[in-house]
Length: 412
Length: 85
Image (cartoon, rainbow over all chains, first blue to last red; front, side, top):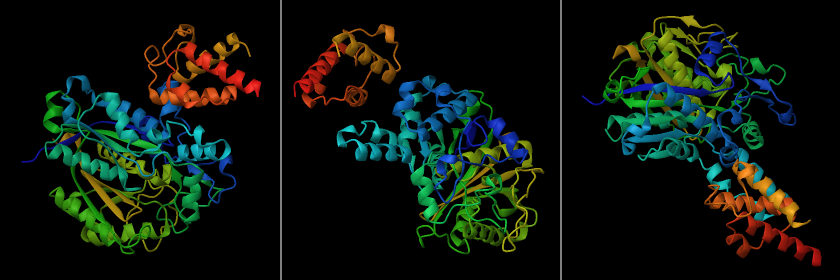
């Protein structure tokens, strides 16, 4: 019997707050963290999900703030909560059996803009020596390793919007194959910058519902017009079950399996019928030795783009054919936007909270369901329902499909 | 700008950059050993000194900086050079 992997801690930094229970309660009240910002008034899309409640000075000293990009600060702050919740004392662990594997889609985009501007307005010699260590995608993983003196693997995982799920899949396998006992994992992103917003906007990927920020992210609604860019982090502590049990840790959930596939068709456009997304979910079930009937909830990728939502719905309808009527799904991106590389971490935490409380978080703004999408998307309001197991989906530019399957902590 | 003014401004900048206690910084303070600055912090600080004093610190001088006093000397030298032109 291979080792079991459990979750013993998590931390969140999101547009709906920086404490797990606060974020969760706001989601259950169907609140939105999306706002319109004056600083983006010359962009097509001016509505984003920013972590306004995150005040770096509350968590870090000035030196850290200067040396670390916002996405790394997010990861460190969320990791601090996750580690505190897990109760793990890394100074008592074998540091070579601990790891830091954190997803991030684009790295320090804001810092790239600042330094490019310094080069153009000042000179080449005024480019900061902090530039490279700040912008690199693996800065979050590396700095988390430093914070907890972790000497096992530390790596950044980059598969765009699937980065966090890919990282957590990696973390899961790292524990399962006995390479490590504890992994700090999840994802982080801070790309709400001129290049981030302008770049996605130029692709016509973003919602331009500027006069209705809270209604802009409306996955599976027939009037959706693109995703809303968000920022934040979701960091979790994954741990070998026996290891967690031995130190008396509270078990918040079990990671039962993961599945990863690649479309290999177009670099950004998803496969129309979601064939490879379905294959990733199928592979996740196989990896977990479970069937479609064992799943009660899917936290969808559901970004609110025209094509992506239809493809994901089609994939699930086909794979879950018999159980489609009893399966609950929702897209929590309707409330916080799309956190790119951070989204999978946040969404797995939300999924674990759903299992804990037996309540499905809502897809807000879903007023008129797209006639091409036939699932129960839990529109507008949360729904209480006994939940045993759930899947969290993340798909990314590059054709990446990554799914994680989790069960309740109380089932062990 | 006299030496005292330069010194005050230099110590302000170092304290701000490193989040260090200003009252503990004197001319004999070693920026790396006493204040925990690494090579990146020092390279960044040199850029900040250059911007604040509107000078260019030559590379060899930058390499030899270890104490606060040496920074003040360097800046004074650069300012004098600029004034002579």
